Length: 157
Image 1 (cartoon, rainbow, N blue to C red):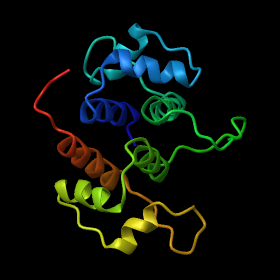
Image 2 (image 1 turned 90 degrees about the horizontal axis):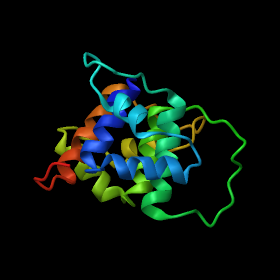
Image 3 (image 1 turned 135 degrees about the horizontal axis):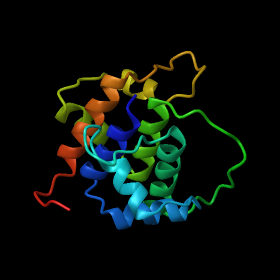
Image 4 (image 1 turned 135 degrees about the vertical axis):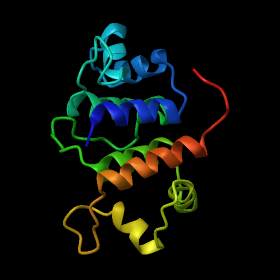
């Protein structure tokens, strides 16, 4: 999984400005400056490219949830370290954008991916559940491409 590509594709799909991304990091209590963020959003071949760590991507997703939805009324244990997986990225994006099953199906469909209702539900199950299905890198990238189409406004940031 290429964390820089994921960060870039989320920014592009949701039409997020650098200011909004920095705000998401701020809400997640993570120190991020504009120069470092610019490096994370550059292409690998560009000068000043910086590799995005799993921590930076995970914190951004947490901050994005806070930015779009506000704090959760449920108390979470912030000390617990959770491995960032493709399934967790999907889940956080679904929560952030308040996507229901039909919208999620449409988003995958926009990327020419057809999943049955059961296959779709299995992506959001807890790992270890008998019907859990691991999300491949290709499936995550397809979702991000579909998300870009779903939220496309014709405007560039």
